[in-house]
Image 1 (cartoon, rainbow, N blue to C red):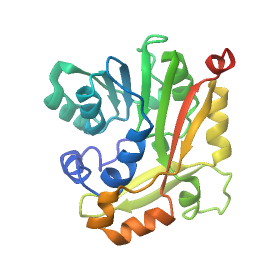
Image 2 (image 1 turned 30 degrees about the vertical axis):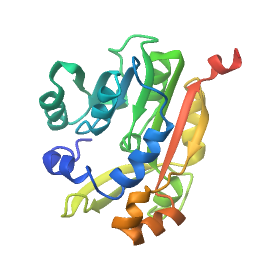
Image 3 (image 1 turned 60 degrees about the horizontal axis):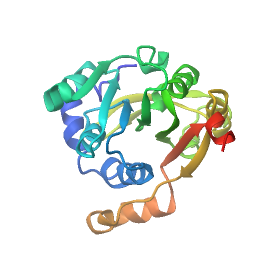
Image 4 (image 1 turned 90 degrees about the vertical axis):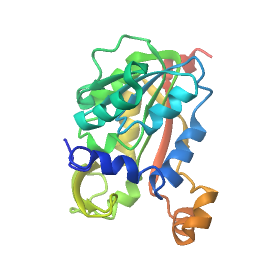
Length: 238
């Protein structure tokens, strides 16, 4: 689904997430801490947004391929990187069929999979394109946080949630899917991968100085979930 936050307001969103609380001082520090050395690695960035992660990958010496559903976000990436990053405007909910088997060392997806109703196509393709010793690292909404907004009260029911977020300084409608840990881990397993690391994140020390109340809140109550996966067959062979 093409959300106005990432299409109509793409430029405003790009500026907003550079130094905001949840993206810059909670999500990114946690995700980046989970990644290995990227120099000389091939990295696939799924749901790349305005390219904050892509810029880090390029600066770290990686070869980067990026996907996003929003043509406005892909325009931003093309303006930033030109041919340095291979940019693709596509709906990753159908997978990534144009990418070759065993072609990426690392696949990263930052706060994107909760916009996808059925994760099975994407996760099977991630396992397919990962090299045998590769990593898939992703962040998503914490299931227990989203459950607080469940219209049915059934934690195990996958549901479309509709909210308004103030990310850019004004309310913008968004919609995304909430799912249980049981469903998420089941999709990972059925795709041929297994979880090798899990984190619920931690705010940066900088946030303690610029927004102490938010630092205290995120230190006590996680908002996101961070997962690292590897191919199950690779781990069995060790």
